[in-house]
Amino acid sequence: NTLQIDGMDQAEIASVFSWRRLPCATVEHWIRAPSWDLLVASHDGYGRLESSVTHRRWIISLKNGVYLIRDVVEGSGRHHIDLAWHLGRDLQLVGEHLFRVKGTPHTLNFLPALRSGWTEKLDVETCFPAYGCKDRMTVLRFHANTAPPAEFAVVVVTSEHTASRPELFEWIEHPDSTISEYRYRSDSVEYSFMFNETGKAWCNSSVATDARYVCHRGGREKPEELFLGHGSYARIGELDLTCTRRVDWAELSLRDDAETVVSPDPSAVLGDTTPAARCSRGVLKIR
Image (cartoon, rainbow, N blue to C red):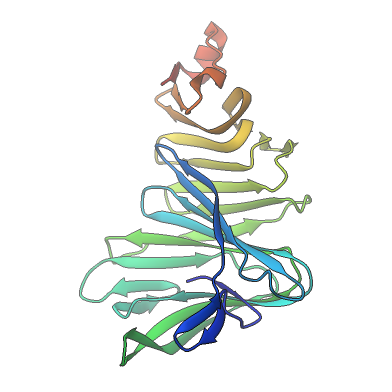
């Protein structure tokens, strides 16, 4: 379940049962917070191409059965990109991008943020679950023929119930190409994910931040939450998460007019506890 460039494997094949060279994978960031987990990793498997590229993957877990997977290709030249999801043999298609585990009410929903130049295809292919054993499996593929930088993201939603709620996952275009934003909505909650490649300060009508990663949760479900990674501030609406210096991560939660901020570097977190701030923002708690 990864990304393939120009039909080639990430590893160099020597023979049927051996490799000439395996790719070197690097974990670049690993953040584990109360409400979010973030992993950023890359590999050099396609550095051997004449126009070499690097594949980098972001995985965000919201710890509620929702996962965002963002794949980015950086480098030179023009390439055919094939992103595949090989689905277990026990998964059966029951709706658009919706699969159910056979014999159970459990579902797996793939929500791609389709962008211009990308196509989608659902295939049935041969798989070998064990040596000498052949079977069939469903493969969900996304393709593009493009020049780097290129990216694609999908939200994977797990559920213990067969019924699916209306959901939407979309890419939000920005005038600054170094900023990528995605938005996921269900009937009761909305998440915004922002990726800032440079780590420089930027803002628009609703967001101001210098963080490399920002995630905001709103909607009818409480609490409202704001998460930043590798930055010093993030402001969305009435939520203001500000630190005196860059921190690995910080998380702000607003429930019942009280704010709770959690960070591995609590001394860097700014809390305005004036009477006016308490009226407008609630009581700040740092732990």
